[in-house]
Length: 337
Ligand code: FAD
Ligand code: NAP
Image 1 (tube, rainbow, N blue to C red):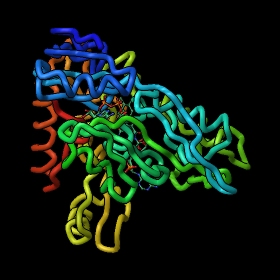
Image 2: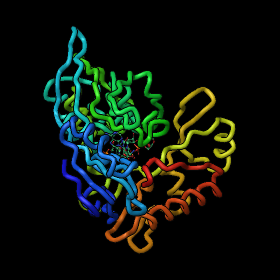
Image 3: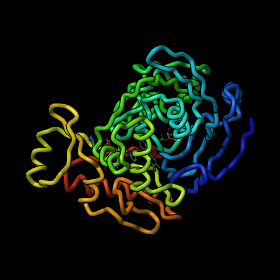
């Protein structure tokens, strides 16, 4: 294993923030985890970085940053309906989606083009266009730093919720996910309920959708709407969509008749955070190099030289302004380091 000192993480995070890691190493082999754990000279704090597409670096990282480059995809089992595939955590997420499409395996086509690595997918239970990764995760294998051993967590042990899991809370910085085993479907089970997918498929002239055409529709919508981190620094949606009770929503609806909502339970609705932020006047806002994207108010951007704290402070201002206008408290989706 090679340990480097004082490394800039600018190239390792999609916001393009120039913060340093006190120590840095590339993880390519599972055996290295034992070596790292046994090395008393290394800092106690060990943090994992995948594609860096869901972190905001607000200060130098005092500890060992482990860049996950564990690679490999293996079929573990199959039956008439399903295939179980173990994917090492350093594999690029979209590369795995392409693998599934090539092998005609369904379940993750709506999650095409989400940036990042496979190991981070269970962390916030990635989701898009009506599908969440928890629907296909069978089990997660992780290295437990304090216990110095690998643990296996079944789907039901992961406490998956909307952009949530046990890895984001109770097990935060305690484990490093080394692989994820997915249960993919041999027979397609298409999710077309998000209106934009239907419209896009029609625009593409597709009348009998397949997993490939659904993935193409998703990719096409994403390319047209979302800023490309290679061109402008961002970490996707900065905030989660809040869920509020129906009573509060009905009162808001009297004041703001156009407020959009989606039911999540009989007495609860989800309100798109992007709409709340836009109505609070932030869409396209820019202060120095920190801003709110011109096309999508849910995405905060770095126009070049913004610091992580400038972006964090902007996020706090947005939260306060949405709260004072709508009495809804937004929470951040991005992991603040
Ligand atoms: P990182 O940013 O490297 O890490 C995120 C967090 O997970 C960190 O706290 C890190 O310590 C932890 N972590 C990473 N790997 C491991 C591991 N192996 N073990 C333990 N902890 C780990 N997200 C969605 O859910 N849906 C979307 O549609 C979506 N679209 C996006 C679009 C754009 C343009 C961008 C920039 C981001 C988008 N995201 C979306 C957010 C992001 O891509 C996902 O959250 C992704 O899973 C992050 O992967 P990563 O490897 O970059 O994670
Ligand atoms: P959109 O289609 O403009 O919709 C705005 C919001 O309304 C979305 O956030 C979505 O919530 C919700 N929504 C729309 N149609 C819905 C339906 N039929 N049922 C329930 N909820 C619905 O959103 P967008 O910004 O272009 O993003 C499209 C998808 O990609 C969304 O699922 C979004 O979560 C995902 N995405 C995520 C990130 C990220 O960083 N997390 C970044 C880009 C895109 P949900 O977000 O709960 O689905």
